Length: 311
Image (cartoon, rainbow, N blue to C red):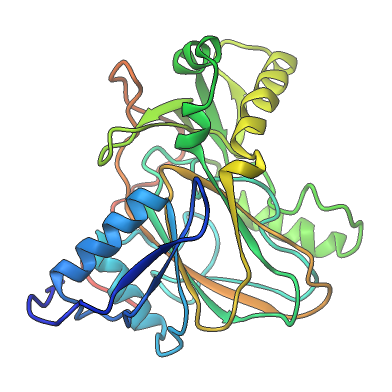
């Protein structure tokens, strides 16, 4: 992907919207021909604020969305298991109040999960359907020293056997949920990750958890659940979060290596559609220099990226 070097960027502004996470970027129209310095400023804002939001990007279609995302790095395919009409773009649509209503980091059940996610609002309900992000680096920083030492020594098994809708409070649409769970887990993936990873660009330490975690290595089920709840609750403290109310044409871009997010399923039977593209990540590294590893499944076709944009 060629990046233009000579388009002006003076109008781009970054406005902080949360104390520990979140910023709004104004004055830029996302497209594949952005100047290199504009892309660098956007990337710097993502790394600093963990998630950034841009309004009024309704000019983007799937091809332009993917071409812009490719300025941040090689793209993954749409998803390791879910069917998609596009090689790059994962369409997440719901009309029965169902969304990714659990705290998670995208695709951590593979060893090299995405570095960045770029999400575009296509059809937004009149109310509800917000998304919340949490800063996992801030959560680590706020841990008392004994918990930091414990977390740094832990590894966790992440698996796609978890169903996004499993924790829904409603018993409706059981058949639909069963179908989604079957599709999501039709190919089994498991990966072992350090609970504390060192960010490859910022050097920050961040907690790597979320609801793809099956267990901690070396601990039994009850011990794993208890410890998971202790650490996960530190991530999702309200002080670590920012909540975005979507409008059509909005774009959210987040550092998937330093965040978790939660799509709130509170929009009744309205139709909601967002489309996601992910940028390939690297093997997470622990504080002692050990790298994540695959236990089950071959995700090379997903995480290796692709050389051309395919639709």
